[in-house]
Length: 217
Image 1 (cartoon, helix red, strand yellow):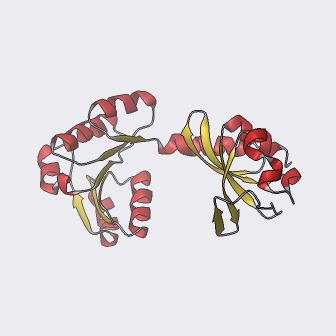
Image 2 (cartoon, rainbow, N blue to C red):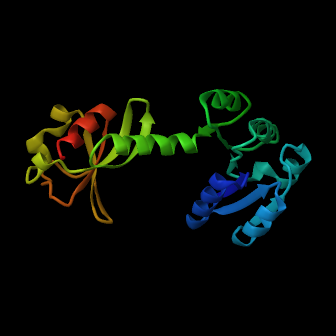
Image 3 (cartoon, rainbow, N blue to C red):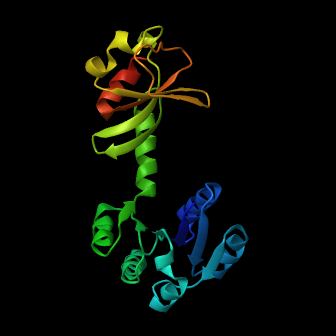
């Protein structure tokens, strides 16, 4: 369990807070809109109405006591920049700030952010990847040319083992896990035989994954 502070309760802040609560964390929320806080306050450990560009407001929150501070403001970049800087000045341990563009990320990092998230960009990338290729169900971008993908098992792989297919050498991907419905078989051995209902979780380059998944159409 971690102690989390979320500043800015727009769509992203609300989704983030809700999920963090489900995972058993202690979450404090802050927003300058009174109606927003009054609506959400019953669900959270603590809540506060205030403008966090005011150093006195942030100081009163004891930001150095939180494991992670999220700056989830999406429509006012100047405020996001100021709050990120103030958090670090006041001793925040780890600050994650939301950005919409790379230029914003650069300024936020220079002003103290430890990590940047791009919620809209990440959703767009996932949607583009799913629409661009058949049988890709999800993916996580690790770098610009490497990711983790969940795909349907190619038809030509059925009834063959991982070793028989020599997947890493022939297809330039690594099989990390096998999903069957809600169950997961992590790091399957070379003797594993692929079945029609399998989804495979693989590590590789997008173009290699698109090539593999296209063989299933």
